[in-house]
Amino acid sequence: MAAPGGRSVLFVCLGNICRSPIAEAVFRKMATDSGVADKWVIDSGATSDWNIGSAPDARGLACLRKHGIETDHRARQVTKDDFMTFDHILCMDDSNLRDLNKKASSIKDSKAKIELLGSYDPEKQLIIQDPYYGSDKDFETVYEQCARCCKVFLEQHS
Image (cartoon, rainbow, N blue to C red; front, top):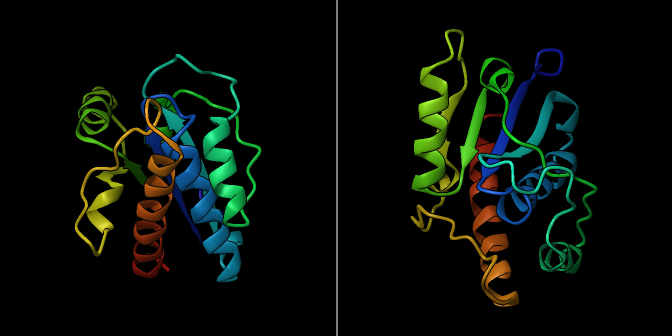
């Protein structure tokens, strides 16, 4: 699934309407700005099936727009194929990590490295909290965490 000679990353959260689409959009912009977007397959998904087909949360979209980033992502659930095709699956919290590791353990050809996106945070904020029940400020916090983590992840994998 990787671009020719490239890499692939899937960002994952519970519903794929708040945190993971922000991370995907931030990473895509960084990869584009660095001139390496064509070397990456970049996507996001959910551990749940609650929001399949939905656009990202309006507060998340507004936050991204404020930073000059657009996305047309539609929510989808992580599939078995994802574990076999993506190099990296980066998730937001311990619950996502448990769900993904459990799914991966039942897939014979799973090759994805599953990690917390926060493990790349230079400020050591390991967990990216779900802002769904929060305020605009909580979405901004998610954006800032994703920006810090994606920057380091891209530097380490370019």
